[in-house]
Image (spheres, rainbow, N blue to C red):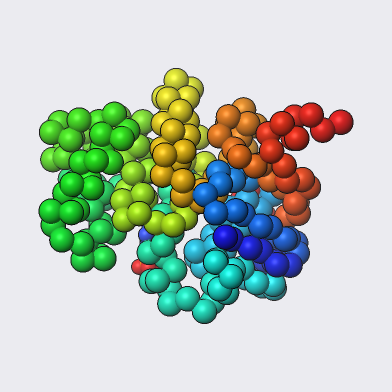
Length: 228
Ligand code: ADP
Ligand code: ADP
C-alpha cells in the first residue's frame, strides 16, 4: 500500500538522513520502524505525508505517486500522531477531535457520534470529557485524545511518531494495549516509529530496523528476535 523506491533525503544543510531505501508496507499491517536516535525514522514518516520533499526516488500510496495527489486529498487520508501532544488548548476535547471531520464537512450528527465512539474506544466516558479543555486531562489522557483525533475521519493510513515516549511506564503500557487493540479492530495501515524494542516487539506485525539512514532488516517480531 505504501511503497518506497530508492528514496533518499538530504536536508538543505547537507545532512543525509535517508539513503536509497526500498520499502513495501502492506494494506492493514502494523509496521514499526525502529532504530537509534538520528537513524532517519522521523524523516521516513514525514516523507509519506509530504511534510518534507524527497531528494531522490519515489513514494507511492496505492500505486499512485504521492506527488500526483492533491495535497489535501493526500493528508486527509493520513492520520498523524506526534510525540508532543498538540491539542489546541482553547478548544474542548470534542472540538479537538472533530477538527478533520469538520474540515471534511461531515454532518454534525455524524461527527458527534464519531467523537463519542472514539472516546469510548479509549476508555473515556464522553459525558465526562467532551466539554473539558486539554489542560484538565492527564498527560496519558491527552495522548489518548491525540491518537483518536488522528483516527477521527477514518484515514486509510495512520502515522505515529513515538506517541507514547513521554509517558510513564504504566500509562505507556496501557496505551500500547489500547492501540494494538484498536488497530486490530479497524485494520488501518499503521506506521509507528519508536526506539524501544520492547514496544516494537509488542505492537508490530513487521519491524523495520534502521541505522544511519539505511534499512538493516525487515521482518516479523519472531524473525527479528531469532536472527543469529
Ligand atoms: P530519527 O527519527 O531516527 O531520530 P531523524 O529522521 O529525525 O532521525 O533524523 C535523521 C538525521 O537527519 C539526523 O542526523 C538529524 O539530525 C537530521 N535531521 C533531521 N531533521 C533535519 C533538518 N530539518 N535539517 C537538518 N538535518 C536534519
Ligand atoms: P499546509 O498548511 O501545509 O497545507 P495542512 O493545512 O494540510 O498543511 O495541514 C496542517 C498540519 O495539519 C500539517 O502538519 C498536517 O500534517 C496536519 N494534518 C493535515 N491533515 C491531517 C489529518 N488528516 N490528520 C492529522 N494531521 C493532519
